[in-house]
Length: 255
Image (cartoon, rainbow, N blue to C red; front, top):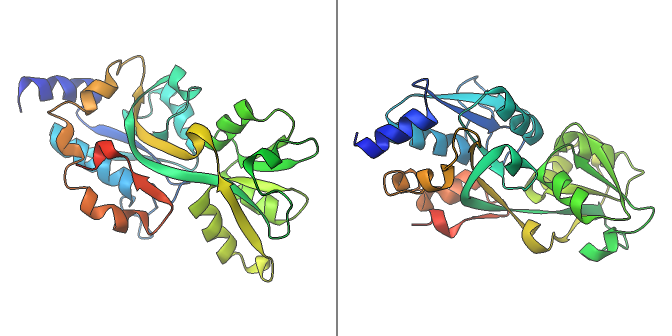
């Protein structure tokens, strides 16, 4: 281990173990292991690669929602995590460049008149969203007239929407499609996805995250020549990790 890697290890894993915060509420990034083992998915895999390169073991710290994962940065619960980049989170968390872009959009009834993104920001329109998700943070900044109805998690937001009474639910396209398909009480209901969120939320950038006060140069460290092997060899595995979902690896991590 050269001096640069040793310095990075002391900064990112000061206890000798890399504590990786993982949001298992986003199945595109991570999934619980049914047998009680380590979580699966691109987030855990990247954490394991980073730990290997640093020469330390990895310990996964699991969270049900992105909001809880982000809030836990204030409690020293993890050393590195995998979160969508957002200015509200950047107050306490330092982000690298994105490693993947995930598409977020609205789900609406098949016969809904809401078709374009601009259609949703109207008086009387109610949109369900998971509390403190990237989509909640984005819509809180962007919407001026529509009402945001926040639920504890993205899954709970979808459940609330499918009960009726709301015009749309916002979130990860893949998660909504999967939950809609597997709900037994949703038989016969026709839903459709709208166009992707415009501007910078059209493809929600997911990145390595670290606590800002300690990892002040997280972006430079993780993408330095010493840390670059974390992304090496990943392009060939993207398809299997993302299960055909609507996301693409960021060019930074594409070799």
